[in-house]
Amino acid sequence: MNVIEVKDYQEMSKRAAAYILEKVRHSKKLNLGLATGGTPIGTYQNLIEDHNENHTSYKDVTTFNLDEYAGISGDDPNSYRYFMNHQLFNHIDIDKSNTYIPQGDACDLKKECTDYEKLVSDHGGVDLQILGIGSNGHIGFNEPGTSFESNTHIVELAQSTREANARYFSSFEDVPKKAVTMGIATIMKSREILLLISGENKKEALSQFLHNEVTESFPASILRNHPNVTIIADKAALANEKVYI
Ligand code: GLP
Image (cartoon, rainbow, N blue to C red; front, top):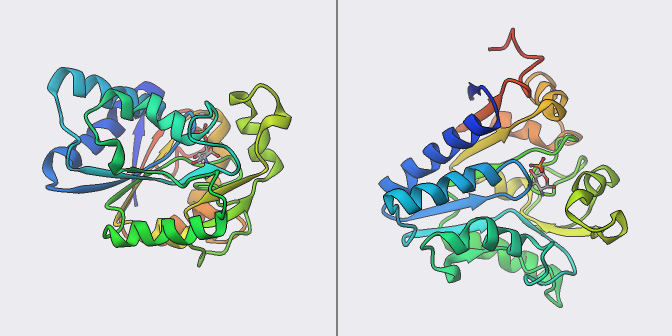
């Protein structure tokens, strides 16, 4: 596991974008796993800036997002489809038909999960998966207690996750109670993982991740068993970790 310490959110975003750009430029065909949340927004901004300045092309890139809220359509400003279109896809030359996100308003959500899992594997799996982390250790929307064997599935969101994400909604009640997420097994099949961690509010999660046992009660801990993980974390998130670094 490679831990890169950076000064702050801006530097994390720059380093993460540079990491992704290396792959975009040098792969004939790239399956990129993407995440939502506040953490990757700066990374996406850097990718857009690079696209405007250097014209890096995404024509040979296919993307797979980790998750989507259940019961809302892709046109809903709170959906992750809307987030991705507005934070990234609308601003680069990616073919939108090559951008995959689970459909949260599918009438048969269970089938949507099976189909999404198959879609990822039919495309040959994810080459590089970008991840953030929830303060309870969730990755994607895999809450504590999720089986490490899980494939794409429907989840009941933890109260703490709904509270953390309420900032994007007009009220807490509007935050969906369920979501569809790639499972832990799906994420672990990615050939490479780039985990981004920024801010003081993530320092406990980062400590647990680095020092505690691998346990389903802290989903991100499984990443310690993955052969190719890079973490880019800022000083605030690494505040407890002077010894580790
Ligand atoms: C959401 C997403 C996760 C993300 C997490 C952290 O729940 N489903 O993929 O990593 O929030 O979000 P943030 O980056 O805003 O802290």
